[in-house]
Each structure stands twice: as structure tokens, then as C-alpha cells.
Image (cartoon, rainbow, N blue to C red; front, side, top):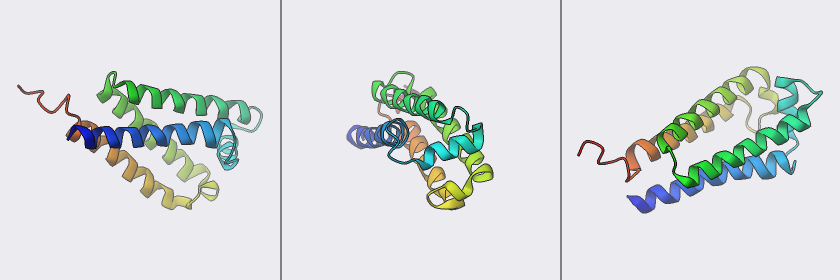
Length: 128
């Protein structure tokens, strides 16, 4: 179980790093800044996109440390859910798969939940 948990954990952290560093900070996917501009306004969209990207990289580091992993998983689930609801309502035309993105977000949320609350070897024997 531990190796499956670790592999999934590294994969989840990689998603945050890829989206934060490559898509937002390095601006390899300009659509991310367009989404930020649509939701938060265009005046500071580049700066806000960079800050969001840096926050996503911090999330990846937090995941890899394992510190307060349950709180971390709940934070990820909340952030992904809120972000995708906003995008679904305010910027569906800018999403890679339009409103269908919500399905992928839900699957990612379920993966995070399952990994932390069913596979985490540190938490499995909490009743003992």
C-alpha cells in the first residue's frame, strides 16, 4: 500500500508543479492568465497568475513533506472545487475541454481523497 500511496502522491504533486511552474509562472499556457483576467480582472492578471503558480508549487512541496497530510488533502479538494466552479461559470470557453473540465477536476478530487483517506499507511491504523 505504501508504494501505491507514494506513487500517487508524487503524481498529485507533479500536477501542482506542472500547472504552477510551467503553465502559470513560465506562461507556457497563456490560457491560464486569460482565465485569471476573466475572473479577477486584467489589470494585474500576470502578477496574480504568477502568484497563483507559486502557490501551486508551494502546495506540491507541502504534499511531498507529508506534514498535516489530511488537512492538505482537504485544502486541495476545496481549492480545486472552488477554482473549477468559478471557471465553469465564468470562463468555460477558455478551458481546455470546456465545461467537461469539471469531470476531470472531480476525478482528481476523488483521487486525492482516496489516496489520503484510504491508502495513506500512516493513517490506516488510526483506531489501534
